[in-house]
Length: 210
Length: 210
Image (cartoon, rainbow over all chains, first blue to last red; front, side):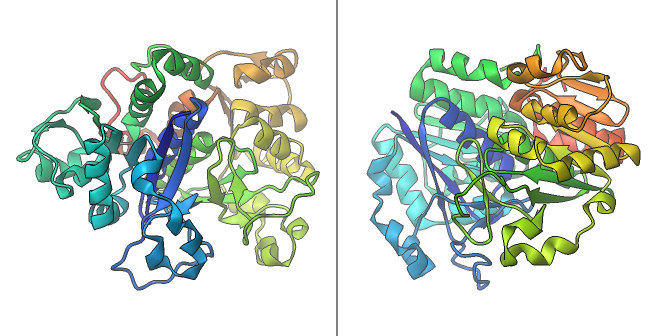
């Protein structure tokens, strides 16, 4: 069974987290979410275990914690996960504040490079594509939310396609492209047969271009 | 500012919860989620405050609790919300198990009838449309996920359109129709200008039929 790690932080765009997570689970992928703490924030977690407060206020409890050592004893049990080896794919959602926290984490940047070095899949959507920049990835085709295009278009071969595949790096644009982004990840992890199997019961209107 | 209440239970379809919630918040609607407990379940809540475990395993902390008196002292503070008067719209997502819990709640059934009697908007998506049946709504145009069509098509004027508007009752089909469902609710609560304003930054691929 393929597996995927999806990162989440305070300010993550809820739909860009939920649509890939849910769609991959429907395809039989073992998905785990991991919370990336904002190390610059002084405000303590409002619930225990800490939950991510999304960009539109939905609070999501992560499956585990990234940089758990920084989160206090309540999260220490998850320190033992080897994030670099355990999963077949790494997914970084957008949401301005959440993407900033995730993309500025040195440990996440290491993880992005390690996944691509090992020919694993890395998906970034919306402002999540900023992690391509902060991780120092080489110039290649890429897309993002239009609001962060100016940070990326001098360093990458910037595209406005809904989903851009560059080797094992898959990037996408926003909540409106989250379904085709998720289906591209399903196709790469599980094959196009599985994509069709998952697509049907979701009942997209006729004429939907994915 | 218009307001909306969206119900959530263990087994709610995460995308059908998140897409309307997030899209309505983007439109300026004051959205609150309320957890509906499964009164038949013996298993205690795994976290405090109780969170809903979605159909694909994403755990979401509700903003408040419906039938709070049944959930123990940790939720009693929210007993004071008058659910019948406080909101302009009521939304019931799908997910087989979650929809069963929500649709079989007598208090939810009362709420559905009260909202429609007061000319407030009621949205149901996927298996959430079963609440139209359990609430005893009169025969009228309606849709649902295909998997529950056989429960509904002898009692309602069943349609396979992605979104069906019957007076103030709005029904829809599944995760694949959650965006057009959410935009229809935005249009009814906030007008078509707001719909266009919210739609643009979500960056749907060209040719998307909503």
